[in-house]
Image 1 (cartoon, one colour):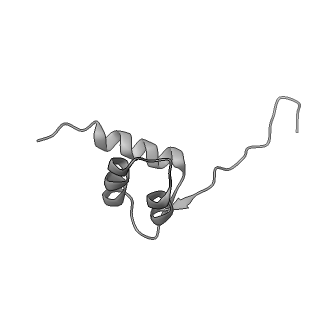
Image 2 (image 1 turned 90 degrees about the horizontal axis):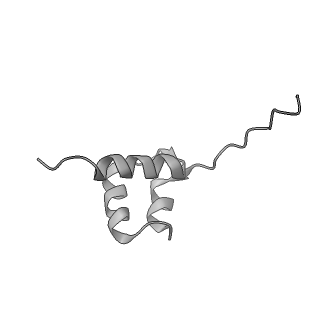
Amino acid sequence: MSQKEKPTQKEPNFTKEQFLASKQFTGLEKDFLRSILKDGETYTIAQARDLLKKTLSKEVK
């Protein structure tokens, strides 16, 4: 490994239930995550925040 290369650190993945129990999200955000995230799948915090951002930025029809 060269000096410029750094080992990549993998972000931890969490389940839907762990996100819903987390204190990193507000109650309103958790309500949206409950409907956005799929049971049995895991997500990084960045993925969950990105899905939440995309959902909240959609135009209401």
